[in-house]
Length: 162
Image 1 (cartoon, one colour):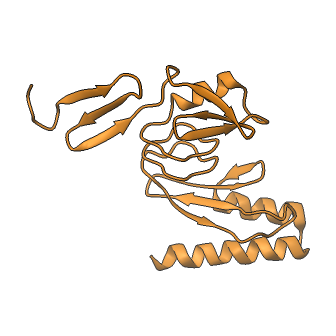
Image 2: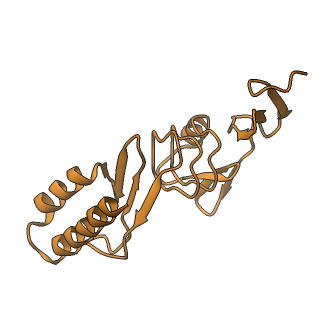
């Protein structure tokens, strides 16, 4: 077998791993066993909430993840690790998690890389700018708006500093 960087070698059909050059890729597949554990459809190392996704949807979205590990409710990503509800990243994004804050009394997640950005807060998913507008529209100037806007400002300062 040729050993140049374009050679693809299948290591295991069971867990769909292959080597391309020096990189090992793990492809989720509907051949993988789907387990229901603690309210999640678990496929490989990734999982989808049973309260949001059917088993069939979880299987479908697992097919869109390439080399992703420990992700929750994600789709159409590559090389992501420990993400929650992100989509369409082709490389592992940087991330910032908020402290517990806002009307949901929960964390908000912000993901970004050179390709795009995404913020997830409850059922909201969009850009940082869209989130800022939605916070102002939803909360006006109340205490939740102040907490969210303070965190958004901290995210902007951090992003501009790197």
